[in-house]
Length: 292
Image 1: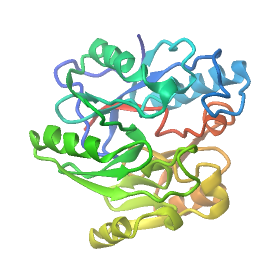
Image 2 (image 1 turned 90 degrees about the vertical axis):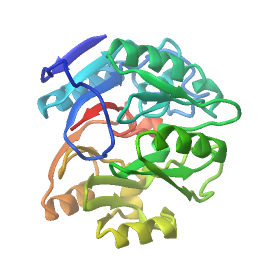
Image 3 (image 1 turned 180 degrees about the vertical axis):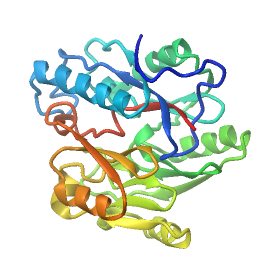
């Protein structure tokens, strides 16, 4: 596993309980350029551009201050480039999931190996019939994790995570996601909400559960709404590298302008192959290891 970007002191180098605290270390997996993209519901990407865009994305995160840990491609597992989904890093270490999408089932243990190489302990695994995707999890604060109960994340997973996270004083709140286009097309919690600061979140309101919108309002979190067109081009999938410093897929000018109107610094990358064709934006491409 290669490392690029800012070098971090080795004493404390992992732990995540925020969506917007400074991103100190992050794990990315290089994309597989061969495999059954159609079976994984991708639009077939250009393999050269796929690799180049991922390299440029990694370089952008490094330039913004993160130490980027680069894992090798997972041969034939084209979705594995979306390193967010197979696991969750908490304040104590990583929890490995089981995944509902059949072609992704090998990914959690592969990612667990990369975590251990990066010095992040694996502290738990989902078991039994529990399944989850990392795109269904957002931290509202260091003591509150919101889980989207979806076609990819089920109630047994929520129950097991409540037990695992109670050990570090975290309350798990679940919200039901809408059916939308159904079980054959992925809809994650992070498909329609991305916190970019403790008091600011990008949201596509038509898909947001009422209880979640009420929670945001009750906490004084300002919503930056995304319109229908830019929702389809992943305008809602925004990665905060520190409060009010955000990375977006290029091609969402209205969302970008709205963020800047709320005092944000924005950065974009060309995601035509690495993001748009696989339906995975900058949050999906990243497994944060340390935010502090």
